Image (cartoon, rainbow, N blue to C red; front, side, top):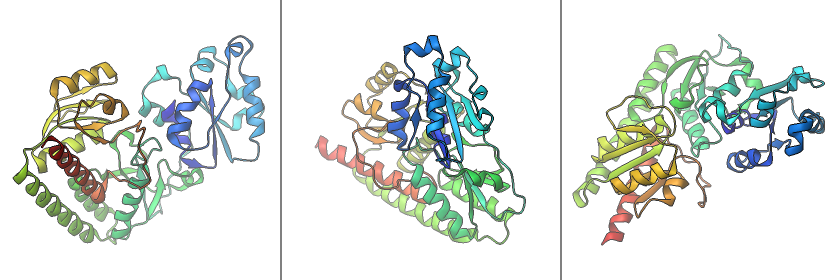
Length: 364
């Protein structure tokens, strides 16, 4: 359900209704930082039906949005009421997204598939996908994706999903992604911006389809950034041992972090606790969605550094910690932090080295 809300609330012009009780509403409302609405179902609605309460809410939003989207939670999904039978129901987007139908990524894609998307063959821009309001790197990834395209002289087209929904009427035939776990399948993929190698290969593919673009500037910047990372890591390793690391996040972000830390810092990747699917790699990875399992992995491995969420932070057992996946509670985040692109790689390594050095100073 939260995945569906993060997708739809990212499009201006769509009013998003969580059709369910207050408990289903407050989590996405607080973590997405967007205006959402709720039908606030109560126990009587299980017996008397939910459409009356929903109809009143839809009527109160009349004229405020170009499109209304209703996200069904467990109660209306189990009851089986058809929202489209309401007056004007044919113009309402209905996304059946109870928790038992899948994970966050499934809800995100299910909601996006309900939206009408049309490709514009004449577009000279490139779509950027993998954007989600739930992602703590959302705004930073948008800025970095646009910056890289701008340096190549290529305009950004539609942002999936952080745009006006009318932009879905004229998407580009080509797409780059900032998060492979949220690739939409819209437009021909030209690559992923995670990691410096990803930036290089993606820019070269862009140059192949748009000969007017200038990949040289970005490739030079990428090489310079890599030299800075290597220099900083070598300085660190002259003073300290490589850290042992545990990573808890989505599969794509986890593999990016593991590869970068192992390559440049010779870090020992103790485990990857993926929140979703697992893509085969040279690192040990398992699906982890249980706090007791998280605690066991941390206590048995005793990592020097943990990447994760507030859940991992609560059981970090003295390890240095860097937030990379929601929920991230109890911290102030005002800047736009990227994880993709050149600035994303630099930012991640900067945070890693500073966190590890702080831990080493505390030990002494």
